[in-house]
Length: 322
Image 1 (cartoon, rainbow, N blue to C red):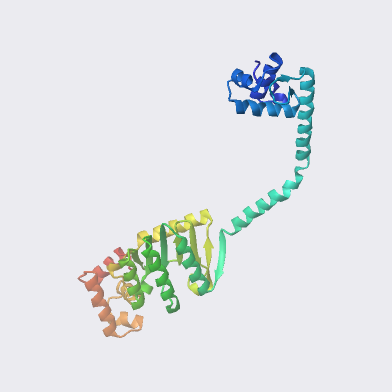
Image 2: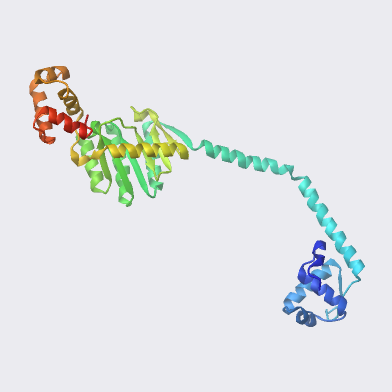
């Protein structure tokens, strides 16, 4: 046998082997073909059936005597069939421009997907709904910031969403600004989150409003001072990387909530203490009574474990309270 020389005409190696065998041994039956080719009788029968369809084998009524047709006739017939097949393929290739529309649709779908990497939602209700939906599909970790007082209208919804998330056993890190912690409801909310397993830290510096889900999707307030205006949903990897870096930086600068961050009024007192020696002048500058001012000073000295105002100012700077 000469390998699969007839492959160019569309015959497999097995089909060529059977055809050559029938040229050498005309009149043999299926059992002899199977034995000579080292295959089962069913495989031999399938091969012979294919050669009969191609017109290169002759058989009697019960296939007991099989023989190959004249090689010139067989090659001519196979060549014509092969050419017809190739012509059909050429026609298909030549008419393939209709595929452009289908491929263009895929391209447009990709472009639409790229646009969906940035999506804007408007209004507090829509923002809360998005947070709830994205939290439901989150599977690893949620990173959250609360830059200021949480609106009463939103607090219950935020609390429900956060606690539902934590009860699923997922990780959460939350940064709450001192201005928010100054409200009793928010203090209780932060404590409840910590009890449910969230890591909660407080911050005094600038804090952007964001929620990041599984490090793949972020929701950022369109107006940092008013979450009710709406939010931007971000899935673009480059922007997400910047937001993650920003969150990690803010987290590194924040302190655990049990450190009792100062209220907004106390931070103002600390800032004045660092510049003004006289209590009367400090109270006057802040527009509060002398008694109230001194009460804040005494509380801060005690919490900072400072012997005087100068030490308190230094300790406050070390803790990044001012």
